[in-house]
Image (cartoon, rainbow, N blue to C red; front, side, top):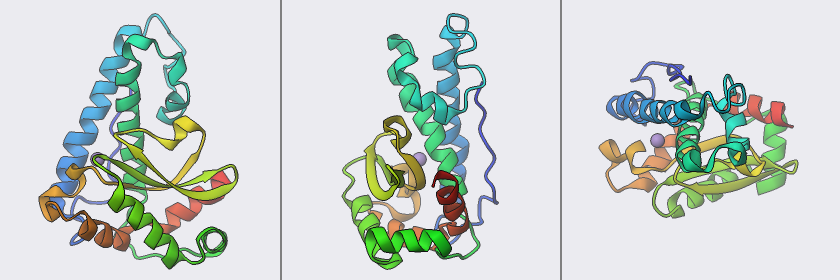
Length: 205
Ligand code: MN
C-alpha cells in the first residue's frame, strides 16, 4: 500500500506565491487520488505478483513498468507517476528563501551559463509545455538537462534522475492564476527549495 505523504510545511506556508486553497486541493484531493488509484490498480495483481511490488518505492516501480501486467500498466504508470511527481514537488518547495550554491551552482553555470539563464530556459520550457505535464531539471548521463513530460510521465522511467520539477497542470495554478501560467511560473521561483535541490544533486552525482 502506498500512502499520501504529509506536506513538509503548512498549507498556507507558500503564500502569496502558491495559495492555501490550491495547496489544500492539490495535496488532499489530487495527490490523494493518485495514491488511491495506484493502490486500486495494484490490488488485483497483488497475489499474482506477490513480493515483486510489495514495499517497492514508487520511483523503483516507475523503472519496472515493463514488469507490470499489461492490463493495468497504463493505470499504474499514470498513478505511480502522479504519486512520485507530487511527492517530489512538495519537497522542492519551501517558504525559506534560498539560492543555488556550491557544486550545484557550478554545474548550473557549466550547463546553462548561469542560474539566471537556467531559470529562463526552464521557464520557457514550462510555458511551452502544451497541455498537462511537468518540467524537470534532471541528471542524465552525468549532465544536467531540462526535460518536459506529458501527463504524469516521469524522467525516472527513461533512466534520468529528477533534481527539480514544476507541475504545470492547470490544477496546480488555476484557482489563483486562471489561464496565466507565466505568472504562476514567475511566482514559483520564489519558493524553490534550493537546499533540497542541492541535496538531490549531490546524491545523484
Ligand atoms: Mn498536480
